[in-house]
Image 1 (tube, rainbow, N blue to C red):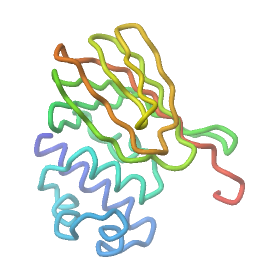
Image 2: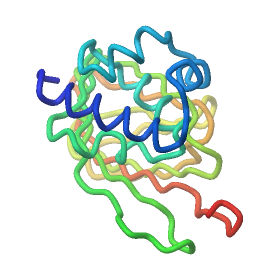
Image 3: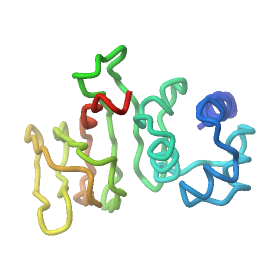
Amino acid sequence: MDEIALETLGRHLQALRQAQGLSLTQLAAQAEIAKSNLSRLEQGIGNPTIDTLWRLAKQLGVPFGTLVAPVATPVEENGVSVHLVEQSHHQRHDEPAVDVYLMRCAPGTIRQAEPHPPGTRETLQVIEGRVSVGPAGESRQLAAGEIFTFAADRPHDYRVSDMGATLLVTIVYAREGPSNG
């Protein structure tokens, strides 16, 4: 991310944290990242990993897309580029939140993703290349044009072939119950 994107992300992250009444120390501990790293992120410096941003979004109780929405550039890390394409807005309580990403993976990439919030489902459509994806023991080998949906509230892997892959990733978060707001 460039300097402007990092500053935008930092301000947005800080606003989300403060809106929930969390201190830097509280959010860092809950997301299992160093307080100094969180402080640097909020100041618009540092280089956040995709996993760090997922953990922060999860602890803030917001979809990943809500955290990165103000940033127009892709989030990149270790051969993986994730770009938010679309995010549902103004959903009613009986509608789930939905994020859609374009994910580009360098040849031979292995990405281990942490679990998303309970009830989250992920659908992958392979645009180009080949990828093996899914929770441990339940992964599927996919080629261009194929689609696979799986429960993403468990750890899951993406294993990309030596030709690389471009994926359309749709994440559907569980509907909020009436008690959640």
